[in-house]
Length: 151
Image (cartoon, rainbow, N blue to C red; front, side, top):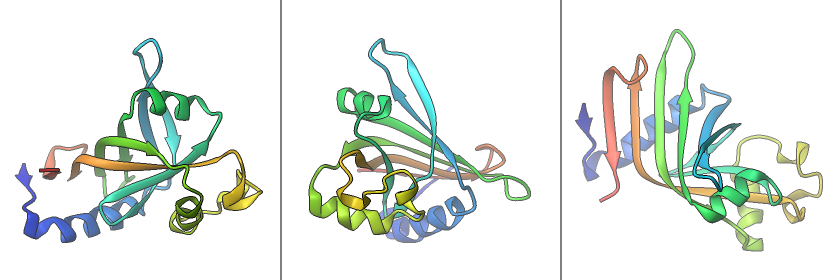
């Protein structure tokens, strides 16, 4: 395992973004009211060292994140790459109208499939994940593991 230095950070996150684009879906784990983990499939998008995904304002995911913001997001790129990406961090529910509009264009799929009212849809809720630890590796974390940690 190699730790990513501050000088290597930009290149590391560029590699993470490129690898994650090969995985259409990934899993996000949050914690329910009883303290049990809950895993759901999402399609997140990297913007530098920030990870974005969207959910509904009335979803269990948004209620869980509001109560407990710590999340794990796991990507697995299928063969032949077998790339693994883990993002562990703090999720922030974004309610600012200007930021919601901006993020509408950052997330890299057609959000109107879920929120036909566009970025002003009352049920559209972007989630900003501020990473504390990001891993990039091959073969399920066993080969060429690189780790970035917030200092």
